[in-house]
Structures are given as structure tokens and as C-alpha cells.
Image (cartoon, rainbow, N blue to C red; front, side, top):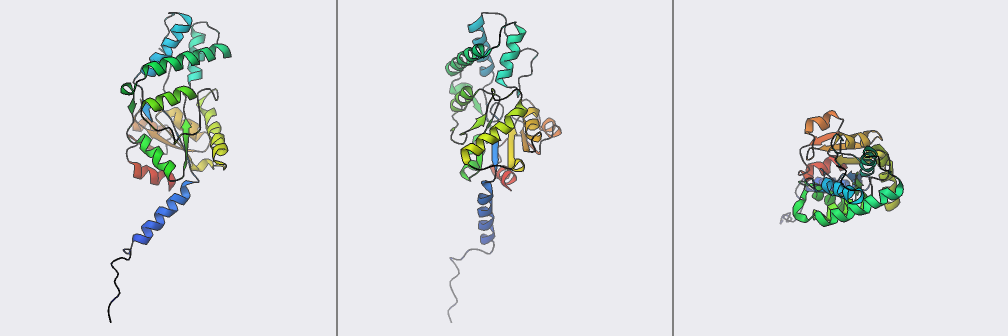
Length: 255
């Protein structure tokens, strides 16, 4: 009797691997992953800050505008505007803020050329991979919405995985941005997200704080000004040197 040809049958563990992969894809849709921009997806190496200061000078003259003494890592652009205006005794009403946003947008568009922005290792690839698996992906950033997209495009990053987000005018502090981003994810995808399945990825303790304050998970990435140890001590559930290990991060986030 001729033995059946098993050459085309899966190896003993293949069905388990396939099932695990299918389960991961199925579970991906329950996840919301929110990415910070500066220091996480990319770095403008000071071009963004210089564009801001030039916008202030263009509108108000050379008053010696500087962020000296201000913590700008993880700060909201709207808050930086208000603090700098207050420092120089200038009115920070809505019209003044709108004028500043336009001037800053135009200056950043002019000066942030692709050769002056640096993509962070693995960050864009991770966002694309998670979105491709069905996870909801978006932004949680202190940037204004318009300048956020200018930076992303200048870095050569496809904005497709970031169809929604929370930005630097959506609240008075970074903690206020988390529920805004979750609400916009719900509106975009037509489904809610349990905070325990929301992961915020950022490079500062403020990114970690805005996650933990709302029962979300936080990944701290040391591609900004803070080392892994500092991000871990700030409460990150996972702290990594960079986001280049896509497979490990995918398993951690979706597992």
C-alpha cells in the first residue's frame, strides 16, 4: 500500500503559528495606539523651535524671544505660546493666538526641508504595521494639528496611519489630550476602546503621565531627551531605546 504524500501538509507546529497569527490580527482591532511626534516619530533638530521664535519676532518685533528657563519637551504648543506672551507682557487672546499659528505654520513650511528632519528608528514602520493589522492608530502630540502634518510629511512619513489625534490646542495640559484622542478614535472607527487596550508611545515623562492618568498603557522610547531608566522610573509599562524591534513591540502591544 502506497503511503500518502505528506510533503504538502503543514509541519507539526505550523497550525499553531497560523492560529497565533490569526488571533493576533483578530485582537488588533481592540487596540488603540497613539504616537507622540517630536522625539518619537521624528526630530526636527531645533528647526521647529527656531521657526516658533521667528514667528513671534515677525509679529511683535525683536523683543528677545526665547524659551530659556521653560521645559519644552512634551509641552503643548498652545501653552508655550501663552507662556511666552505672558513673559513679554503681550495679550494672548484668541485672535493673537490664531495669528501666531499662521505665522508659525508658514515659517515651518518654509524652513523644515526633508534634509533637516530625522526619522526615529522603527517608529513609522511600527505605526504602519499596527494599522495594517487592524489596530486603530493616531497621534497624541503637543503640536498644532497643521504643524504636526508639516513635520510628518517633511520626514517622509506617510500620514495614513494617523487619521485622527489630539493636538496642542485641545486642552490646557497633556493629561487633557488623552480622552480627546480616545473620543476621536471612537468617532473615526465607530467603536469604543477600553483604556487598558490603549497604548501611548512617547519620549518624555509627560507622555507616560497622560497615559497612566487615564488607565492606559505607556511605552517610553529613549529617542528624545530622556534615557530608558528615567522613562521607566516615570512609570512606563515598557521602556525601550528605540522602536526598531517591530516584532517585539507588536507582540507586546497586541498580545
